[in-house]
Length: 284
Length: 233
Image 1 (tube, chains in turn brown, green):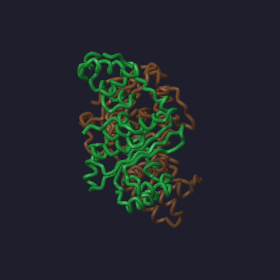
Image 2 (image 1 turned 180 degrees about the horizontal axis):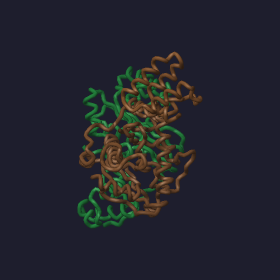
Image 3 (image 1 turned 90 degrees about the horizontal axis):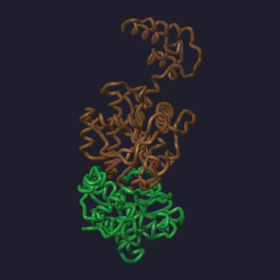
Image 4 (image 1 turned 60 degrees about the vertical axis):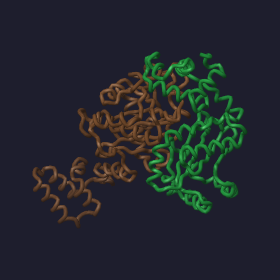
């Protein structure tokens, strides 16, 4: 599921962007070893200050698992500046209907192999579909995308092979970087959708994206025991009971007991115990 | 109807308005407006097809300071449909006034970012049903992007300082392709000669036209010859 974040709505999505910058730090800093600036676990460069558009993909638990950044080629962009080595000193292509995409990344740690939802292939295709459809709706016809050879291979295997390349492949960190051309035509979008077996709308409304992103916070141990107080004897007892429960009935009995003794702890404790006993148990 | 290249129109101020009128006619719009901000001059240049009453009102009330079609659209790389601005209080303010002057609140602003911190906006409006607008939008938005950049580049290069910076900087590939066009080859031929896809040829031609501030390929070839970027074929 995809959300498009730009200068108009980014104030709503600062936490989502932070998670994306962390993903970029892991991908470009650690895995690919590019010379990027990482501060506080986030990879942010000067182009992030130019109000680019981000196309961001979530898995179904609300984690940011894929992202890409788009800029106009009429103004400042990476190929005209920091990636100029790829163009071998040549001036970049400049066109109103050509956008540049950079920082294309997917979370290889969280995503699985295969083609199902929450797989690497699915997330990549969904992000491509989202990017191409967003660009097409803006009247953009082609995208020049700076990628590494692995991503190039992924595109070729996903029925989305670049139709050409500009400049040359240059060494960059542990891998190398190249600039590929991809068109935003209905044909390409259709072939990607068929390959990934994605027929439905991939875009989330702003409210839906926020709800999905925020939903994952509720299952974390922090919410179950937000005040980080030591567990009371009674809480420990319930956690042990929950641990040793082997059947649905046994779990049900524990929950009933929590309900029956609810005057013995605060409403917050009760909610935490009832809604996320497993997270709570993990904490104990 | 072919739109006439801006730099071939006579006069300095009226030609921009003339160009905007042609954009309206060609793309079925009621009105068009351009605003450009050039950091080297530090001012906003505006050209509109609106009537004088509205222009006067807009200036008198300094609406340019709060106009969300400029200040909010600046933060987007994509055209901003005014439907996205409706929630902004300044939108209500500006368009309530505009309504009194008979101007519709249905439109789109296309932001253009230039290389030197310059930024331009082409806005077009059309009073019609939402459904009709959606269709028209999808049909013309790609061409309007080209018009926005053409208008912006012409306005910006008319300033001496920025004009000097905007010198057309063709890549070897772009010059090579233009040279083959000058020699009478088709895009398909050129793709075959250079062993690149004909879409790549098209992308380079689009880029060359924009760098040379031309709307058509023949104009681009003429200009490239005139400034000595390619030979006479």
